[in-house]
Length: 223
Image (cartoon, rainbow, N blue to C red; front, side):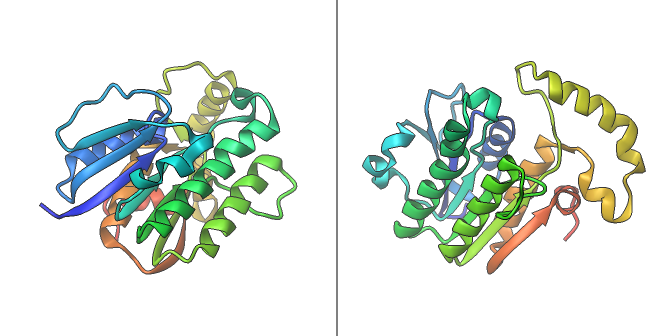
């Protein structure tokens, strides 16, 4: 087994849960550390879970040492309660994790962003995601992978009316999205997680953005 180590944040979310499961199943990592705001219902001999306060992340600096960082943090404005709270979870926390981990020697950072992310977008959600991408780029990780999924499909364990409607529409419209429109098809959370771990194994140099169609292709074995 490799002696590489992984750190994951956001392991309680839909993509994060799948990512953690795959990380523990692969033989690539001798140890996996999860930083979370509450205990995880997962036990494994190679998993260490630390419950921390992300508002005081600097105090947990010693825990952010790993070779590969998987960041699956994210919320919605509705769930967060305000734009300010949303920005904290989707920008400040991921950037703090990336910055401290880089300072502690991490060489690879993998981030779940969003389709349409752009620092110049007029849409607040997309602008925050884009600003985070640019901030990660500025940290100059030897290897950084930015994953931009479209509508994320899967069982979140909670009811979201908007997503239920969008998922139903996607079942009809998705097959019609071909060519350059393929990246707008819905994508399973499991496929996002598979793709992140597959890219981590390649440890590609530089800063690379993966759109939703490319994520799906990598998850299903495309090089």
